[in-house]
Length: 280
Image (cartoon, rainbow, N blue to C red; front, side, top):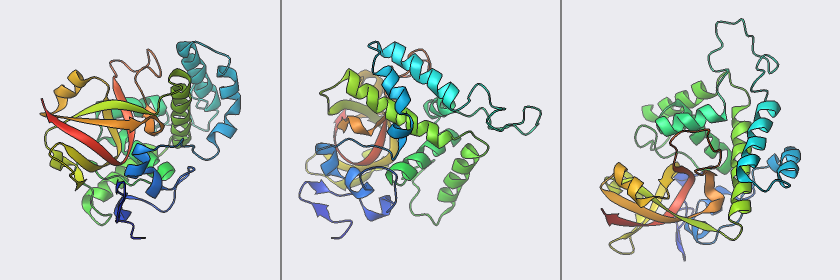
């Protein structure tokens, strides 16, 4: 079947927006499709739950989400030696320490500060590696891989990962923990209705438009949404509303209470989505 062909349920994920390789239980052409938005299944990054089974066994017994988050943060510090970087191979006397303190929290803060920065490039690269969804925008449309903007994105991604401590493995566990918490806190929930402020719908790749307010969009491989319509008003003249699968959330507000100040963003893994667009 043609990789760009529209399915009976709407546009499929174009071939130019996906990789044939990923590290989860579904191929990109499925998890990035409109059909997946409508009928999602759980996503699992290969080996993460098995490798960190002790963490999940321990928090299974804890009823309070805030206490579970403290268990998670402690596990991250001890499991990845975040408080003992010398044991992870960093030389404390070196003047070229640079990125040795880059961890999953700094990456999240970097995204919240600048979704086109170095930390954001790391996150987009992680989504590409784990889910096979190629980034579509970083400081502007990326197009294909044969242009200066794409080269700049790859450079930023490499700089963000250089001299770090298993940073992508930390993000693997962050995603897996987020999915665990979603199952615990919202056991019967399959979707969240979320919002995003935009100035022009043409900023996104429009694949189809069934009616005046409904669009089938190819979103970037990682995106910020909010659960508060009023907050979305602050970021554009139009409100994009979408029903998003919980399985595509890398991060949700309150996942790590008291850790990221002022954050109210959901980090949503991309693909093809049906959205409704309205004027403020």
